[in-house]
Amino acid sequence: MTSAYLAGLTVSLSLILAIGAQNAFVLRQGLRDEHVLAVCLACAISDALLITLGVSSFRQISALLPWVDPAMRLAGAAFLIWYGARSLYSALRSREVLVAANGVPAALGPTLATCLALTWLNPHVYLDTVVLIGTISTQFSGREAAFALGATTASFLFFFALGYGARWLRPLFAKPEAWRVLEAGIAVTMWAIAAGLVAGA
Image (cartoon, rainbow, N blue to C red):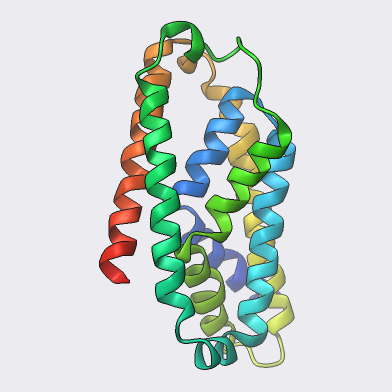
């Protein structure tokens, strides 16, 4: 059981460490200190649900619904293009709006809606959790639950470390210029992911 748990932990961490739309959003929320707990929980619980789905039934899903992959790619690309445009707009705004500690924080509802959209409309999330982790779990016959638990643990560890660890970067992001660079980088990341999704659809 221990080996299956550690394998799940390692595989999940290796997949989740890549810079993506979801990670960029969690980092941004951590830097702003806005709804960090809710955002980290939403991401980690979403991953846990998808990992459970992948370990238990990914083969049946792909066989029964072959249209899901291209549909999710196009929907995800559309959302990421919009989110990237919003980030670029933020990068071009005035100095006062970009100061980390000032201004009115975004409401919890819209923040969670954006977080969940970045998670559930991103086909890469399904590829990593449902397909890849689901496939690898078949190597641990009879120990799939331990493998899934390890993979889920990795998600919780990563998102909470990213969200709450971002506070160590706050002195850097006290400068509006740093926020502009971050927002512009997020925009480029979103559009690059969207281009990849459209190319693969």
